[in-house]
Amino acid sequence: MSEIAVTEEATDVFMDHRELLFGLVYNMLGSVADTDDVLQETWLSWTARARRAALGTVTNPRAYLVRIAVNHALQRRTTISRRRETYVGPWLPEPLVGQVADGEPEDPALRAESVSMAMLVVLESLTPLERAVFVLNEVFGYAHTEIADIIDRTPAAVRQLAHRARAHVHARRPLYAAHPRVRREATERFVRAAVGGDIASLMEILAPDVTVWTDSGGNRKPAGLRPVHGRDKAVRLINSFAARRRPQDLELRYRRVNGDDAAVLFEGDSPYAVMVMDLTPEGDQVSGVYIVTNPEKLTHVHRNEEDE
Image (cartoon, rainbow, N blue to C red):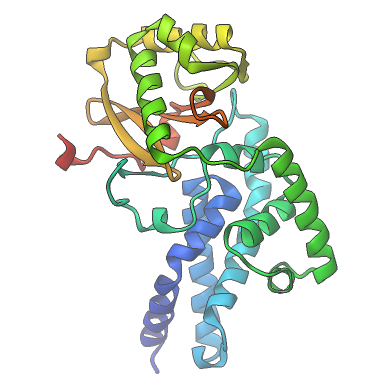
């Protein structure tokens, strides 16, 4: 078989598993750009393997590709950690934005297991290995023995990593999910109040202990240099954010972001901000607000012409 034919065969196999690989790596890294880079590295490693020996000698291509991708992602965490040391203000994951909230996702990657923005923020506090084990086990259902083969650890070590990660996450992220209709209604109430500068409505919808993260990367103002805690401070920050743009200057679109209802603000054809809300267990108030305005994290966000 010619080298071109070998590469094409390897690429076909890779594309059959790309959706899974994207979900795994994105949930490990929280960055679309870095995920794309890791998938490119994975494809290069896979095609190089195909040129050395026939693909038929790989008994389980899916497992082989997952192993390559996860280990490339673990290596990429070092680069991301160095980048974070000089990042201006709070860091939030790059949002995965789909179509209208009630429609089918426009990106096949969004059909993979979705981890909410709030959960991704919690996962940032894990070690790289803990996060890899948590994503593989809790999100994608891999057994500890399978994970041990993927990250070159013993099953006992993987069980210990999984226990630490699970305890850490569950202590910071209670296991509950608001009904989709309740989430949508709360999201729309908050966005109307925030964009319209309705302080009274904001005071009503925000929980007393709400936290607001604004990730601008230092590229847009105003933005808090650290997360803001408490309803009064949150209202002042959100109101200052709204005051920078008149409502008529921004176009609001509701989208599915990391699997949850959220809002995207456009300035002309360019994305201005992605706003994701986390609700209290009762679902009647907003306990967390994640606002991404860094243009570098919104390059993959586009308006859908069919919504105009």
